[in-house]
Every structure is written in C-alpha cells, then in structure tokens.
Amino acid sequence: MTEQPKRAPGGFPVVGVVGGGQLARMMQGPAIALGITLSVLAETDTSSAALVVPSSPVGDHTDLAALRAFAATCDVVTFDHEHVPQEVLAVLEADGVVTRPTRSALVFAQNKLAMRERLTELGIACPRWSRACTAEDVDRCGEQWGWPIVAKTPTGGYDGKGVAVVGSSDDLTEWLTAVGEPGPLEHGILLEEKVAFARELAVLVARSPSGQAAVWPVVETVQTDSICTEVLAPAPGLDRDLSSVATEAALRIAGALDVTGILAVEMFEVTDEAGRATYVVNELAMRPHNSGHWSMDGAVTGQFEQHLRAVLDLPLGDPRPRASWTVMANVLGGEHEELYSAYRHVMARDPGAKVHLYGKGVRPGRKIGHVNVSGADLDDTRARARHAADYLGGVVTE
Ligand SMILES: Nc1ncnc2c1ncn2[C@@H]1O[C@H](COP(=O)(O)OP(=O)(O)OP(=O)(O)O)[C@@H](O)[C@H]1O
Ligand SMILES: [Mg+2]
Image (cartoon, rainbow, N blue to C red; front, side):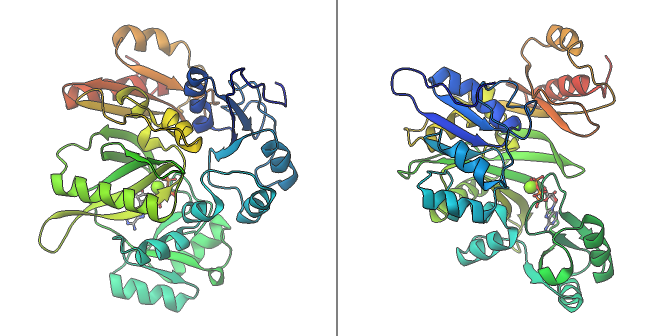
C-alpha cells in the first residue's frame, strides 16, 4: 500500500476519508466509476477499506500529526465515522483543510446533548429530554416522564453502545461505572423519555456546499438488540402527510446545520394526541448510513456516490428508487469464520440478490455485510433478503 494517493490524469481530485470501516470501503466503487481517487486514513492495514483502497496510510483519528499529514495529500477530507475530536478538527480548519462536513456541523452528530439543544431550538420534534448531572436530576425525570427512562452517553456511542434503559438513578450509576464513559454522572448525561414508538424511520439527505439537496424516500429501519438488521425502502404503509413532514424536517435540519455530504436523520414514528401518525427525531449521523445501504442497488443514485458528489460540490444525482421495494438485510457475524463457501448457495438460490461483504473478520453479532433485494412484492422481497443474509451469517443452513 502506498502512502501517497496517485491522482488520475484529467484534473480529478483526491477525497480523503478518515476511518477505514465499511462506509469508506463502499465509497471506493463509485470513486472508481467517477475517476476520483480515494485515500483512507485507516486504523490498520487490514481495515475494511484498507483492503481495497491502494492509498490507505495507517493512523489514529485522534492523532493530530497523522491527520495533518494525511489531509495535506487530499483535496477534501470526509469521514467514515464521527469520532475525530473537535480540537483536532479546529486545528485542521485553521490549517485551511476543507472538511466536509465541517467541524461546526459535525458537533451535532458527535454530541447528543448538543444535538438535542440545537434541534429543540429549531423547533424539531424530539422525545422529552434533559441533561442530568446528579441523582436528583435523574429521579426528577423518571418521576415526570415515568420510569423507565433512556440514558445516553453524549459522545462515542454506536450500535446501541452508550444507550441504556434505566429504572432508577442507582441503575444509571451502576451502568455508568460499567461502561466507564463519560465517567461519573457529574460529567453530564443525556436523559430521554422512553418513547413508545410504532416503528423506527430514517430520512437520508445529501447536501452540497452550494446548498443543493437531494433526499431519498423515508425508510423503515428494524433494529434487533440495538443493531440495525433490516431496512425497508420505502417505509411500508407510511402516512402520506408523515412522509412529507419527516422529509421536510430532515431537509430543514440539513440546511440549518449547514451539513455537507450525507445526513441521516433517525426518527421514531409515534401517534400524536389527535391519533395521527407523526415523528420525533432520535439522532443524527453525518456520513453514509446503514439506513441508506439499500440505495446502492435500489436507487438511481446510491448514497456512496452521492456522498462523493456532495463533498466535492458536484451536482447531485437522482435519488429516486428503481423498484417498488428494496429491502436491505444486514449480515451479522455468526460462529463460522469462513464465508466464501456460502456464495455458491446464495447466488444459485437467488440470482437477484445483491451481496455486499465488508472484508471484516467474523465476530458474533458484528456487522460484516448486507444483502439488497428489489422487487414488486414486499413480503417476497423481504424474505429473499433475509434468507440470503441469514445464510451468509450462518443463521440458516438451507
Ligand atoms: N428515547 C428512546 N426511547 C426508546 N427507545 C430508544 C430511545 N433512544 C434510543 N432508543 C433505542 O435505542 C437504539 C439506539 O439508540 P441511538 O440511535 O441513540 O444509539 P446509537 O448507539 O448512537 O445508535 P446507532 O446504532 O444508530 O449508532 C435506537 O435505535 C432505539 O431502538
Ligand atoms: Mg441510532
């Protein structure tokens, strides 16, 4: 692997991606098609993206020197995750590095307390929430909203790590000690009412520095043990008014926070006092997102191509679906480390299934890939996607 990205002739740019996970990896296909050179600052030389991107220097995303050296070889820097510290981003900004999204937008995807404050200011519907620093704060929320409540570490969470349902302030203290982050309660924690949602939705927006935005249809996301396991695109039976207000809210958030690249707005579908379907926002992500993997095969423009176009301020592609339904099923690691032999069965059984594996080692419950299936019938499409993903994950054997 070379340290210096090799630029294609013809004036094409180098896009740097901090983090070598599957999201960076999946940018490589569209980057190749567009003649754009990708360079990845990877955790190790066997990180998911480092296996497929020739220029993948190894460096830690909190190491300022590593980031500076990396950014100096790129025209624009974007991210595979949200964990580059604000202090590091501030130095890069002062150096004149173009990061997309910018530091001031990214904070709302890095810090759930900052996100709740800003969305509330914007008048976007959120669950009832509060910042707690003492056991009394916690008890007050539990009494007002009803136990149990949801506690979240403001930073650093993913796949439900950093989220706990707690039945008392003692429960919360116990959990904080167990996870070690953000340290003792005095450091501040986000509390939310436990929302009795009908289902989880997500809206994915791409926005460019010029302000052009494109939005995919609202999708339903299904989580199992706090990990996204399925996405149904579009969300089946979604109320037409809810679809437009949810879409409007996501576009408004993208504009108000000046997001560049992909913004995922995770939402809960709830029923209002008048019995109508509506939404509250769960959280934001500013990078390609699991809820958009369906678009790689199911939309005219997939999220990874769109992310590259957006961060380079190119005109955005058409986000419209190509089929009535596309279902994405995540492949979770099982007991077997050997994956390739499953291809024969999966491909023979369903030539329409599109398999995406991430080159990651198998650990039980780890996201190692996904399968997209498009079709005219939702139940059939869903069953096909689920079967292929489960077979690859070793959940089913025939
Ligand atoms: N206030 C809430 N009420 C009920 N359930 C919640 C609430 N907040 C979170 N959850 C559940 O926990 C899951 C994970 O929460 P959240 O999305 O905030 O965490 P995360 O670890 O940052 O997420 P991700 O897996 O998207 O990285 C949600 O998808 C939802 O199922
Ligand atoms: Mg989430």
